[in-house]
Length: 207
View 1 (cartoon, rainbow, N blue to C red):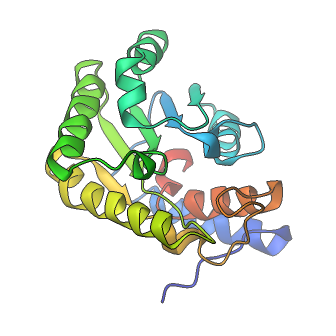
View 2 (cartoon, rainbow, N blue to C red):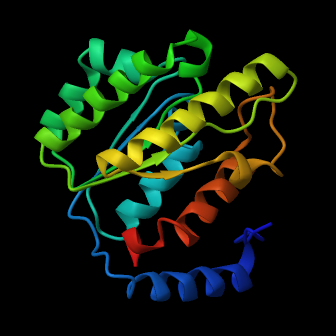
C-alpha cells in the first residue's frame, strides 16, 4: 500500500517541494490556465476544489472553479454549466472531481459512458489539452452507496483513459481521513487531501 505523505509543518513543506521538483522533469509543462469542476467537495473555499484553486493561483496560474452540491456529469451538461464555464476561461487543464452524485442516479453502464464522452468532447472542443479526473471517495455508513460509488469509479477508470483522460481513484487517497457526515470532510481533512494530490499526481501543475 502506498504511503501518502501528510504534508503539514515545515518538514512536510520540504517534502512537497522535493516532489514538485521531481515532477518538473516528468515531461509535462505547467498549464496556462486551469478549470476545476466538481460537486460538494469543490463547493466551499475550504473544501478540495477551493484548496486546489488557492494553491494553483498562488503559483501564478489563472484558475476558474465550479463546485455544485448534489450535481454530477449529466447536470453539468444539461444545465449548460460546463459550456458556460468553458466560455469564461477556456482551460489548458481541466481537473474534474465528479462521480459521487452519479452513483445515486443509478445509470446503466453504456448510458453513463455516453455522458462521459459528451463531457470530454465539450472540453476538447474548447481547446482543453489535459483532463485529469478524480474518481469518487468513500461513503461511510451505507453499503449500497459505497458499492455504487465503486462501480462509477470502475466505469470511469475503464473508459476515460481511452479518451485521453488521466483518471485517479480518490478512494485510497482519502480512505484514512475521517468524514463529518459519512461523505464530506472538515477543513483539515480537505487540506490534507489537496496536499496529497499536489504532491502526486498533480505536482507538475505547480512545479
